[in-house]
Image (cartoon, rainbow, N blue to C red):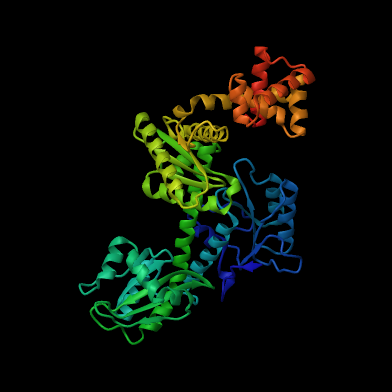
Length: 546
């Protein structure tokens, strides 16, 4: 697939212009043997076949096999086919291979690296947006009459030309720019500008009337006649190809719109494309960069001070982590529950940072001091648990609050403890320890279970390397259904109380006594020996039965 061609005069879009536009650091220039003023006329994604022309295009090495050999071969092949540059992915633990740099130098082709936090979609969006801006800057078909003053200047010029008030909104109904508001402006416009977004009641009204559906499907200016206190309006979608980026609204403000207002608005919608592309790119880049930083901070990967800086957090402020984990087997039902929890955490804890990944939602909470952290983390855990429990047909979710740490640099310790709390809650629920099940807690609430889990983690490799009668018992019985292991689990769990263990297993006590004799007679295991009971308890726990 070829994308992002530059329109009427592709030779005047250069690598320098693209890099100057990249304020968020999606791309990093590694090498430019021919200089940065090489012409760029589009992009190539991955290996698109030998017949596809590469001349003066940027090749995105998506799907590249790991290793220096593949990177070197990709650079050489792109240069052979006349490409202007190659973009390789890099990360902190996998920098661009030196072989690829040497090949680029030898072949005379520019080499760039994609930031670890970005993806190929971000790179494509950057190149599209930069190309549109380059077109506007050189007086092409999208040239901006506001002379480079950005979206506010474009809006002011459009307002003068159509004799109305202009508002530019993104697809989330947030105001990106607006012209001056006159004394005769209607209440909807005033509340929209003051609030920075279209009021929810207004959005609901536009949906009911069918105007939003028309806006999202129309390719031309929509006219809405004056109605009571609402003045005449013209609305047009801002699109890049078939993609909806936002909309322009022109409202009569104490006077009639100019006769050519619709034409002016069409032109303004074209001119607004690169500005809205940049808004979308910046917003997407910010979200991805923050998610990358938060993930690195929680997992203890990379430069933790840099991660805190990306998140706008001080390095010396205490914090705590709360984690909500779903049951992976529940599928989309659990996905919806986690989405609701992520939204709630974002809305109710504006200073927190929320990461949604895989089967969990993690929340990093900056706090005032250690005592505040414990209370804040438990409060959020309780809140998320209550929300999950109140969702109709909700999937099970367990919420763990980690300990408060003295600095965000230690956030991974709190995150690890929160995950241990979740493990402890699930372990207790699987074993029927709590009635009804408890699905939120802090470390102090399930301390003994956490200690037991950590000990079992330490013992697991020791048990795996051992042999003897106990190992033979566990392996042989699990292979035939595990009746003896389950019987031993109940017997050990009840401290050798046969009647109580039999009730738990729904067996007659004599049946349980028979099974215990089989353990002694067949495998020669003395259940009265304390060392044997200890090892057997650990072994049974490691099977997941107890």
